[in-house]
Length: 285
Image (cartoon, rainbow, N blue to C red; front, top):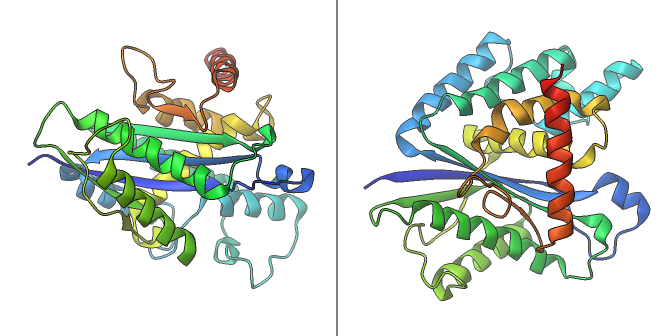
């Protein structure tokens, strides 16, 4: 039976009533999912560990995308890093070296025989009056639908989905909505190619979740940036290792591998133009 592992992580947050101050911190809520053949899981895990050894990074510590951006600010400003900061263990590593590590980590995706990336995002500046649980459900649902559709060509295919824990309350909700959709169906009448239970997997134990975090970070660089600026490294990573591997159908990824939540054709068109613009800038360098 062909089995696929799907690792998913979220970035940012969604608030139903968001202030301008909160909007600056969380302009978007997004989820990134990477599908790989389970036969290749061991290889990407070993290659990831080798990269950590190459850069002299602690094997048992998670290098989050957000840690590097916080470390960047502290190092540029030459600030002392307090003991309570979760990225304190990285204080002796230059943030540029850590960006290089993430770049190589994302490049591991390109070396896989089978890889499909699914991205969903919500623009908080739209000031949606939708309860958070409903938005979170939409993201999980979009992910499930696209995984199911990607594997339905073979009745023997099976996907096992892993997500990073957020909080006890949200983890419980994710499991409940996943099982509800799996059991009752939606526009997909029956989910025949995904396992019946959602797996919560600690990111610091999971290479797949950590790579999903880096995909989130690279995509977020595209969303948050109106010109290359300080996000250039993230944008370059996006085009090098994320963009080529986004799920597509008949030559298009918009609506198939990238979905705005809820559906908004204006936002989709704006993202398309932004991606095209950044792509030209990268290619012209």
